[in-house]
Structures are given as C-alpha cells and as structure tokens.
Length: 305
Image 1 (cartoon, rainbow, N blue to C red):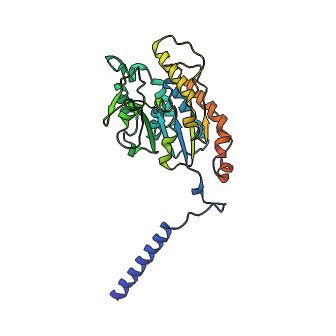
Image 2 (image 1 turned 45 degrees about the vertical axis):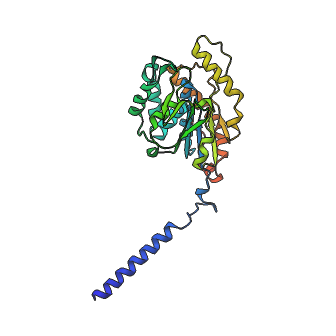
Image 3 (image 1 turned 135 degrees about the horizontal axis):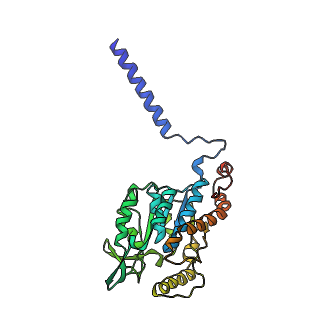
C-alpha cells in the first residue's frame, strides 16, 4: 500500500515538472492575431539637454504615459538625465511636476572660487538622494543610460550601472559654469558637449525604435551675461552637429522652448506644457511605429484638460 502511494506521488511530481517545463518553453499565445504581442517593437526614449528647458521632458513623458505609449528603456544627458532618472526610479508624472515647481538655483548649486568653474553642483547630489526612489542603476524600474563627457579626452562616457548620483551630477556639469565631477578616474562634464540627444546610448538595451526629445532653443538671442554667451555657444554648436544623433532616430519630438531662458525654472508649468504640445502632435507618428493590433487598441489622444 505504501509502495503504491509512493509510486503515485512520484508520477504526479514528474507530471507536474513536465507541465512546468512545457509552459516555460512554450510560445506565447496570440490574442486575435497570428503574431504575438512580443513582436511589438521595443521603444527607447532619449532625452536631451537644456538646463531649465529640460522640464519640457516631463510634459512629453506625461503624454506618452496617458496615451499608452510603452517605454522600454531611457537615455538622458544633462537635464534630460535627471528627468529620465526620476521617471525610471518610479516617480509618477505628478511627482515629477511637483518637484519641478521646487527647483531653484540654491537647491542644487552654489557659487564657489575654483580654477575649473564658478559654481559647484554638489547640492544636487543631496537633493537627488532625497527625491529619487533608488540611487543605483541596477534598482531602476526602467533601464537607463546616462551620458557625460570626459573633458580630458573629449570622449562620451555612458553609464548603465553603479551609483546614479555622481553620474547625474557629471552629466549636468555645464562647463565654464560648474566645476567638473571627478569619478572613476575621469574628469567629467556635461554630456551635451558630445551630443545634445543620447540616441546611440539606447542601442545596448536592444531597442527596436528610438524616439528622441530635442529641445529647440537656438532662437535669436543677444546674450547679456557670460552664462548666456556660453549657453548660446552650445546651442550654435549642437545645431551644426545634429546629424550625429538624428541619423540614429526613428522619430524626433521637438518642444518649442526658444522663448525660455536657460534658468527659467519659475516657468515650470509653461515648459511642461510645451512638452505636452509637441508630444500630442507626434502621437500619430508614434503609433505608426507600433504593431497594428496595438494601434487599434489605443484610444484617441488624451490632452490636458
């Protein structure tokens, strides 16, 4: 009797293991289509630099999320890296907007007397540790790449693992204004020097489509101080070299932020709205990049009320 019971238990266990193995290696079921939902292209979003203008990225993400556009990976440089890190760490759009309203110069920077810069963004590290849901790349909800520039060699340096905080500080260290950040044997500054939008940094994540968010800020402005001179120089240089990243993108969303100054943090709502408007205009093209069955399932664009 005991022998028969043992035999039956062994047979039941083997049957369960075979079923589990078959399930693990089976093809995903299709839903109303011969193609699996796994065939949906993986979408990567690259957020460019822009200092205060980078708040427009929040508006873009807001529209994408509300309209069901998937985000499988993120890359950011300069201000775009901070927004990307916040979202990837698990902050909601509402929480990002709340933090945007609090940003002021004294909250992330202070003036200093140094040979390599006029200010330091050390305070940014403290602020980020307080706001982000996690502070290591490995713990992020969405894969993230952050690009900085090695000021000694001129090389782009892409980070995908390790401590987020020094990397974000480095990517936002506007040369001439902030002192460089020394990290892992390198002297790092703003990633926008080597490319205003970090499109190529997404390739290692295996994405199929790259969506870039480029902040158009190269309007006609007559600088009135040294910081505006440096900023305008950046915009001119990046306008000439846009092909370096545009050629790798499937779609470019361009919020019009030409009327905003580099430090217009107090105009957060207007900047976010500029991002929303640009993303809403781009929705038809975004949906065209996705699978046909997914396009049919998405509702009409949801605009802000």
